[in-house]
Amino acid sequence: MTTFQQIVREIRYRKTNFILGLTAILLATALFVAFFSAGEASKRETTRLMRDIGFNLRVIPQETDMEKFWIIGFSQHSMPEHYVYDLADHPGISYNHLTATLQKTIIWADHEVILTGMAPEVIPPGKSSSQMTFSIEPGTVYVGFEPARDLGLHPGDIIEIENHPFTVARSLSETGSRDDIRIYGHLKDIQNILDMTGRINEIKALECMCVGDYDQMDSLDQLRTQLKDVLPGAKVILMQSIATARQEQRIMAERYFSYIFSLLLFAVMAWIGILAFLNVRERRHEIGIMRAIGYGSGKIALLFLGKAVVIGFAGAALGFFLGTALSVKFGPQIFKITAASIKPQMELLLWSLLGSPLVCAAAVIIPTMLGVYQDPAVTLREE
Image (cartoon, one colour):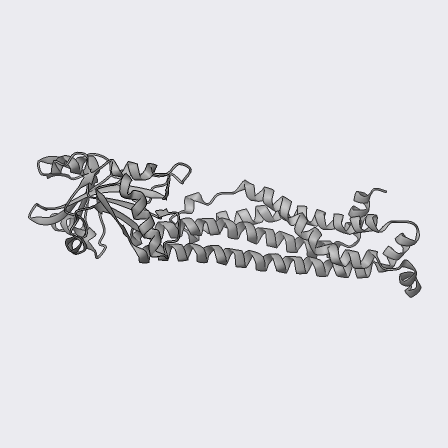
């Protein structure tokens, strides 16, 4: 009789022990898969939500009067548009999203509005292609809450700004900030209106960082030094509270996932180990007989380890599909913004099939060693 046949007979004979072990691995794998999928969705959702706090790095013209900048919210000077691409191509900078803007206050339809041109985001190679800000098509505008309400504007309406016709793509909802008096347009369109072709007055960066830790002021000095030659006519402003909030949130999420995973792994190994100990204890006379008729310790140990591996494989496969079903079913109800990105992750199946048998085998090693190295004469004398 082969070792595998013996394992199958042992499983059939002691169904309860097998089912309890299988259930533990199944549930653990299902929770891991569901939690990991939800964790990835949580990271994306949090990033999308935290973008509303603002960009953590702002690059503005060097000659900007900072008192006026903080009062009106943007620089009254301009700099070359190519700065955003120079910044993106600089090897010492890590970033997720860059966007160039041009802003100016004008009087339009008896309303004082902030005309804001937005360029398409610059996203680094290898990063997610999903944009973190809205994209505006040329020839269209997004009208802020105040002018849209006062003038009764709706999507599809045609308006003129400085003798340039535009289609209202959206009438924005109220935000309780200066964004309520903005009119957003494509950067090229706004440059044409303001006769400022090729000019911008700010570059905003999301999760942009230099080598080093933003908690240290010398890192900001390092960043400014790095960009001095790349953007000679610009100055860098770090939104310290925003950068710190994003960093702390990311660290907290990673620690939370590590804590949950460690706790789950410990609980499963303890459960499998207890089941293995009970199984070895129940079979100690059987082990004694096998030792007495010539079975080596290695072959007997292989029976217990083989059973653990079978439990691991079966539990991993079933747990993956259960966990995937749970994440696909309930994930979109929790993470509504990134719901479309919650999909089965087949790489988790591979990790589950590799990890679960190893966890099970590791959990039964000690009980197995305690059982197979008992003196068969002592064990049989008890019988």
